[in-house]
Image 1 (spheres, rainbow, N blue to C red):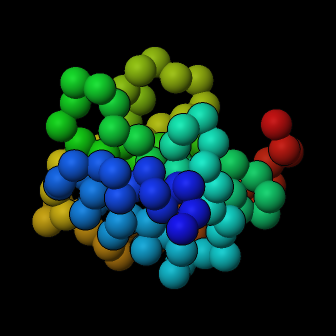
Image 2: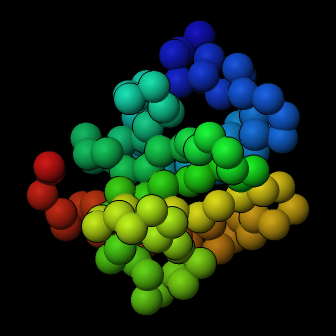
Length: 121
């Protein structure tokens, strides 16, 4: 088993189910590489860090963080800047019922187009 998958399976519910579902949508939508970086599941698109999953201490949601999310805010107002971050934006998922899969797939596809245009940092 991969370290990223192990990390997800160690999460308590409902975070584990949310992360497994989000992971499956990411992996079936795009050709990504799953890695375990900074003790978090990261997904790389075109060899660039693309999105990662996190459960911030003291919160009740899974933070799905897009590395270049600031460039997507106009098209996807559901992206939030929770911690005054310069580039990254995220969506917070408290339960699977609140995730609109079609909208999430649109977000992934738009983010992948931006990732193809940006330089590797």
